[in-house]
Length: 213
Image (cartoon, rainbow, N blue to C red; front, side, top):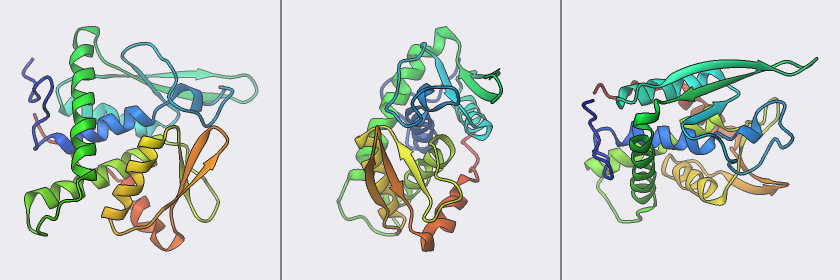
């Protein structure tokens, strides 16, 4: 199939796209979707190869990234509910490539997380500094697209289901020059963006083009 990724090591040139894909998948939880009892919980069990979002732009972004990585994704829309209708966007990959997707997403998450948490000093012009910046932007783009967001409230913020993801989002904000605040809420963690910095982070929702395979 001509994948550009090795099974357990993600090439530097496609790491930001693979890491953003992994972050989107990590943020997607069926329990956050309309019609589910809990609106703010950690990742729930779901069928292998199925990722669900309540936002079309999150699903389209994951589709674009996975396609750029060579994984032939599919996007389906399901409507549900009674008086209060809702729409769920499902992204799937063929069963024969699911093991490869799992390995790639796992490796991308580990490599991206390691790079972002590395406290070693790097020069402003070094490739590693540039990669940190791309990974930080990728993390926030994924969180803003896939996580439940506080709307019509100041300051804005996103809800996350696990401490590891929330802590990494705090680290990436710091790398982007923004100090965010994490607070515990029933069943989830809320990462709040200072009003003064909200516009800069929210602008990251506009996607960058993924690498061409």
